[in-house]
Length: 81
Image 1 (spheres, one colour):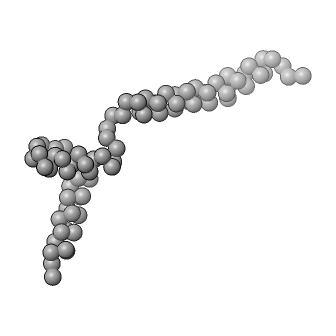
Image 2 (cartoon, helix red, strand yellow):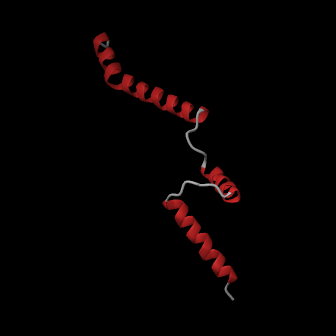
Image 3 (cartoon, rainbow, N blue to C red):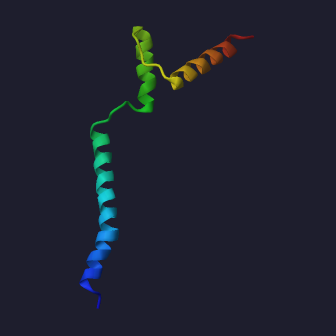
């Protein structure tokens, strides 16, 4: 019916790369779950608040600068009559 070589060729050209990428995706996902490299976004607010309480050096990026600016503007709007 089907030639055995054609089936092997199909597997090598289509199924093998798909399976390879699925295995890579599963491995990367599992490694990120078991060994996270950075805290989640929700946790960054708690870390920032703790750093501010402790008055220690903290990493500052563009996002943090914008968030601090927004907080200051919000506080000014609340204090203004």
